[in-house]
Figure (spheres, rainbow, N blue to C red):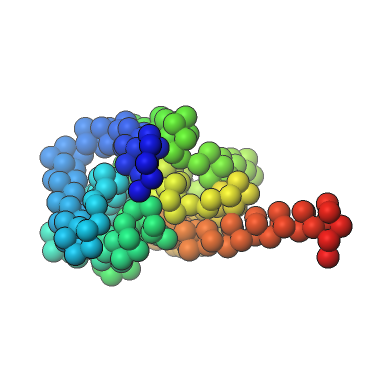
Length: 261
């Protein structure tokens, strides 16, 4: 972990501050059930962090609360305690802790958890959200961009695709866009697992918007959040490719500028 003001936990705290409006609106409309899901997710993740702390002397991170919020909000409903604990355990361990903890992981642990639950228990329905909860994603994104913990290019790239699809008159339900916005802010724009280069981040956002469009028009019967989670998973698996493209283009530009073969 870096020394100084901007260390791993500072970034986690700023992310929690950004997500606070989203969390408060969701808890307000979700009531006791939402609070119980968040409490369960937090408890399970805390236990696994404790296990790895004792096994590896690996410090836990406040980012666990971010994962807990994303899972509690987006996981399929009526799973029951056992299935939810199983999915969270798989996602947190295989998606984060085996890589050395938050900041070293390749895929967002909440994305791994949600994909596991979606593919493993396809008969359970995905959550829907009240409009104020969806709109709360906007201040969350603005706070994240203003503090520098959410990549602007990823958010803007996805937004450009969404605006282009809307302007083209493609018939996509508004609930799909709502679910896509929540997943974009909570999962896709994760500063750890999104692309690291400027061009790569734009490609990251474009790819997510493209996958949402593809699934929304070609995946019959899929729920809005299910579509967005699937798009987030495929996008996250391609982030290294986006950065590779950006780096190779930069190298080619430098070679042309300096007359090198």
